[in-house]
Every structure is written in C-alpha cells, then in structure tokens.
Length: 248
Length: 208
Image 1: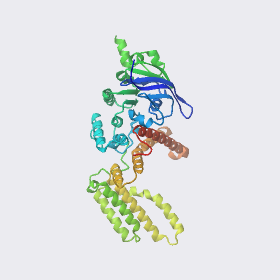
Image 2: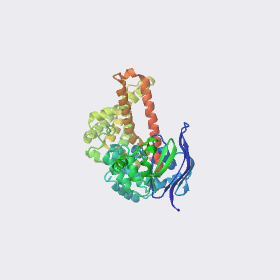
Image 3: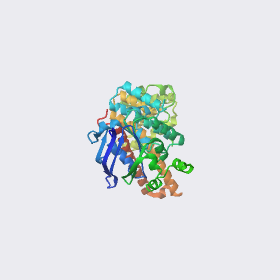
Image 4: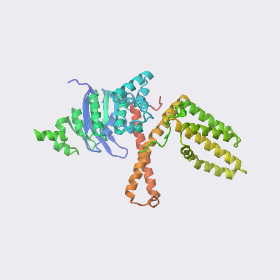
C-alpha cells in the first residue's frame, strides 16, 4: 500500500534531566489527512510526545514529518508544517492584544502586512471572533481564550495540527462549539485528551500511552469499548458506548 | 479575579484620552527633560506642577488615585535623600529640588499610563524607534503581570484556607519565602512554555 505519511515515529525516547524516562521507544505512523487520538493516564508522557514531535525537546530516535527527518537544524523550518495548541491558552496568548497575537506567526513567516491583515481577519471570522482584534488576552473567558489560541495556530495554515487537551476546562457549550470547530478543520490531526467522548467522535484511530510506553493502537471504537484494556491504563469506556451495549 | 489595577483609567473617554498616544508620550518625555533642566524650584516647579494639575483635571482621572500611585517613588527617593543628607554640607534646598523633580516626573508618567491604554503606548514607542526587543519585553511584562498576580492571589488564598486563623506574623518568614519560591518556579516554567509557543510560530533568536 502506498500511503503518504504525515508523521512517522521510530523508537522515540526522552529522558528528563532529573533522570525520569518520559518516553520509551515509541513508534507509530500517521497518514496524511488522518485524525488520531492519543490517550492514557496522567503522567503517561502524552504532552512530552507532542513536544518531541515539534522538536521542542531533544529526543532519541527518529521523527519524520512528511518524510523529512526532524533534526535540531531543520526544526525551525519543519515547524512551519506543524501547529500546536497548548493546554493552557495563557501560554499561547502572549501579546498585549489578540490581533498582535494572531499576527505573530505570520510576521515571523515574513508575510506582507496586507496579507497578514487579511489572514488574521479571515481566521478570526472563521472562529466567530470578529471584533476581538483589540481585546487583551487577560480580559477574555477561558472558552474565548481557547478559540483565540486556536486562531494563532490556524492562521499559519499548518499541515499537521497537534492538540493538547483541547476541551479541558471548557463549559459544555464551549466544549461543543470547540469540537464542532475541530470537526470542520481538515488536515492531519493528533488529539491528546481525557475527553473520550470527543476522541470517539473525532478520531478514527487511537494510541494508548502509559508510563511513557505505547501500549497499543487500533480503531477507536474497538479500543475504547474494551473495558479490561481501558481500565488497566487508568481509562474508562465512554458512557455512550456503555449505553449502546446496554440497549442492544 | 480583578485585573484593572495597572492601567485602570486608561479607557476613559476624555479629550486627553482621545489624543494620539505618541503626542502624550513625547509630551511627557519633554516635560521630564524640562523638569531636569530647571534649576530653581519655587517658580519653575510651581508652573510645572500647575500644568500637570490642569492636565489631570482635564483627563478626568481621580486626583487621589494618581497621587497615591505616584507615591511609589517614596522608598527610592528616601534612599537618595538619606545619602544626600549625609554627603552634602547644606542639603536642604537641593533635597526639595530633587524630591519635587522625582515626584512630578513619576506623576507625569502615571498620568500617561492612566490616559493611554498600554498597547497604544507600545505602538507609540515603536514609532519612536525604540528597539523591538525592549517593546516585546514590555509587552510580556504587561501580559503576564496579571497572570502572576492571579497565581499569587490563588496561592495566598489557599494559605488562608489552611492557616486556620493564625495571623500572618505567626506563620513566619519561612512560609512566605517558600510561597515566593514556588511562584518563581511556576513563572519560570511558564516562561519555558511561552518560549515554546513562540518557537512554534516561527520566532528565532534574531527576532524580526
């Protein structure tokens, strides 16, 4: 089968400076256009894995992005293909105003001022954030901050999107809206989350991580409906799948 | 959390608030230079003080608020005055001159911050060709000052919940030192994450 791989990981390991082994020999592949979920208990190494994929930490092993191996010398260039949404939007909204925050990436890509203005405006509109240009990050609700943080990522039109707990701390309405937005975004996506209902709705394949190791990978519904597997790794079968098995 | 303590009145709608930020910034810089050049305080500083008072009244920012804010200079001034009292043979007149000069300068700066939203001020500084690395740093300080104060407030609240009526003085300096240490560590970790977020958006050390 000749598939185009957006992301390939081979024996990726990472050890924290204090000696803690956060990632142990992780290997998997993600096809272009695929949505993959990464699940696992707290401290499983999920966020560290995303940082490694973005070349933000020095790992052992090999990571390829669209076939190109990620190294410390080309990480600046390869990161243009990647968009990472941090768990805490406050880490991502660091400029005094939202406009400047969304324009930060495009400015560093060297786009013209006109193009930046046009793209920023269009991205904010797409996410229902018209009129937020001159607002400050610290005056927004958590849900609004999260959408603004997403705008800072989407404006650069990355080919692979990486989400770290995209729905955590959101109220039900903001969560629903956010999931709908993610659903509309095309392209390769990797979603880390404990929100298993969302993982079930959005992804076709999941990978379970525990204590820095890859436990298994497979079709989302199949893995999420396996109670032994889920519970032995600090997870639970989502309620919607349980209900289905009761009623059928 | 309450977030409006830094530039609380900067979003009022007085004629002076509507004035372009760059006018106000240049005015305050020239005003401070003028204060420094004045050698005689009785007449010169009365005029300077009067001018600032008129500006404050027109800007509708409460006088007491600006006055209290300007007192931030007192500890620094006190140190300088002590040195002057020791080193100068007849310090009286000179001490008044230095005190008025410092206080009026700070009052003018507080007036500037209270009549101009901070992002506008940054834009004006950019027009004055202040290096972008300094502006980026100022922007970060403004942005994360609120988060840091939120984090500090939350930590002190949790201390309150677990100190069961013991007075601050009874908890000892060690507790406070530890809280400050933790706050520092958290800020450091956040700065790492913010830097990663900047790298993800094409930031390079050379900047642009």
